[in-house]
Amino acid sequence: MESNALDILTTTQLLGISIANWLLASGVMTVSFIVARAGIGFLLRKVEVLAQKPNAHVSHIAVEVLSSTSNTLLLLASILIGVGVLDLPERWLGRVSSLWFVVAALQVGLWANRAIALTLLHYFARHSHGDIHQKSALATLSLWGAKVFLWAVVLLAMLSNLGVNITAFVASLGVGGIAVALAVQNILGDLFASLSIAVDKPFEVGDFIVVGSLAGTVEHVGLKTTRIRSLSGEQIVMANAQMISITIQNYKRLQERRIVFEFALPHECSIEQIKQVPAIVERIIRAQEKTRFDRSHFRGFGESALEFETVYIVLDPSYNIYMDIQQAINLGMMQAFAEIGVRLATPARTVHVASLPDMPQRSTDTGHDTLMQNSPAYGARH
Image 1: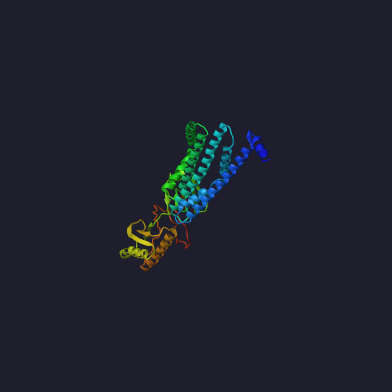
Image 2 (image 1 turned 90 degrees about the vertical axis):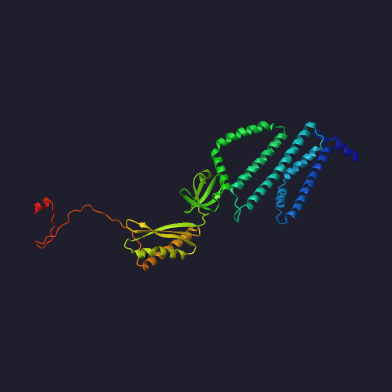
């Protein structure tokens, strides 16, 4: 009876292949999937042990790469192994071998894609100056470019294995790439400007910058645009190409402020008082914290006042601190000048009048106020 069942399995055919061959292929496929999955799990456990050691960055990347293994591709590979034991015609065996390469290339591509992403992110995180790593435009462009190159190579390799003439395909891609580049040259200009910003770093996220008439804090540097939060609260979006084509003032990198301020005293001040003024201003400035005195001079004679010029350095980039110091200096000068009897000059303007109309004259003949005019008509009425 067993021989009868065996005969049935060997003689009965499905799609031109015996049932026994189909069962053998199914068994090989199942065993292949289990073995492959078990092998990946075994390697993953070994690498996880190594990843627990300090500074084991490569092991961490290996863990992530092995974890990204596609069960679908493993299943497809197992199916192809099972199909390989079927009694197929020669032409079908050639196609199965081509599919083998496609499945293997896709899986290697997935592993390489994950490895490249983790390696680049780790590199930029390690070389980031901030406490929290911000994915910069350079990191985004590098990751995007590496992935495009990887999958282009994988695609060309699969097409070549399938018998496609990739030489003509690459040539057509080159011509098409030129056409696309001409069509999107503005976008490409912004992309390369983004790369320039990432490499040269004229500003970074969190910097307070002034671009032309616009001022605000940089919130995001993207592939095409940069977003700035203005002082009044709205978000400003500028094209990267426009950003690098004009002068940018970066106040975040300001180490200290050089302050030049002027004041004036009236011409009535005595020479002794004028001599005391620079010394008084110097004493007041030196009394302030976070300041370095430079100079204070009686600069010259103005039209309506004596002009003084003072220069000092604020040793903190904060604008609020500078204003607090300047306010303290102004109040100290007002108090000190009052003590020596000097007041600050007020704006004055002298008006020279070429002529004035005749003024009314007071008559004493009758004891009444009478308007006397030089006009003949007015005299005629009297």
